[in-house]
Figure (cartoon, rainbow, N blue to C red):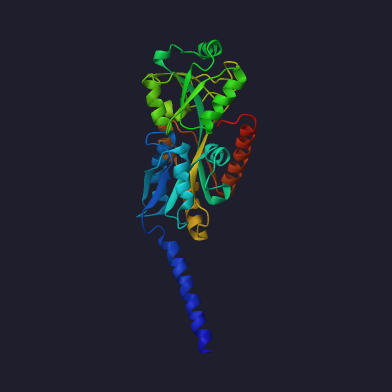
Length: 317
């Protein structure tokens, strides 16, 4: 009888401790790893969302953004996958790029390495050229690319990412060839473009919204004109069926405690209906598309299949 009472007391204490852990989370700052340079689209999303997630998690919550650029985002997301699944390390997660990393090279993670929290942004691609290039229309760009295959240099944030997939589609649709110059994120690619070090760039609409005076923005890869740039024509309007973009969100390492996962999911779900957050994202031209939990994981699996299909027909290494 005494043994039974002791066991019951221990079990009761464990339940109380677990309950307290849930109530107290987070007890220390949460690190958010961004696999790209500061100032790019992924970084802007993370820094814009962070104070809102802090608010939803409750008083005392703190999210600290840490940039770990390199290897087309692979360094940062690998660090996220390796981290302890305690809720104190999150990582930004870009699609299709992060799953493309598992196809074109050896990766220390796969689709099952993460707890899927939320996709937050669906940011369409734009084609931009430097003012110095003289290629200020889509027709001029395509004509030059056809006349001089491989002569036009293209700055982008990664191989196997949405910007690269957009270029592959462009080359296929127009029977052209370009020379890729990859950078450690969209911000340095944009800087090189504005400095005339590359002639062309494929970026996302959020990454050029504040730089339209310094760059030629030739079109946006959406079915209809974007609310963020209503005067910017789609490629479809210009006779080119090019639709493409970047999905950006947040994951944690696989194996999060259920209560911690539930609290984080509840926080991220609030982003979609928070007018202050939507306003902040609109000011940075980030189109919001919140997809959480299992739906986010299903989206990841779909885009991994797409990346594999592209790799099988047009390998990029």
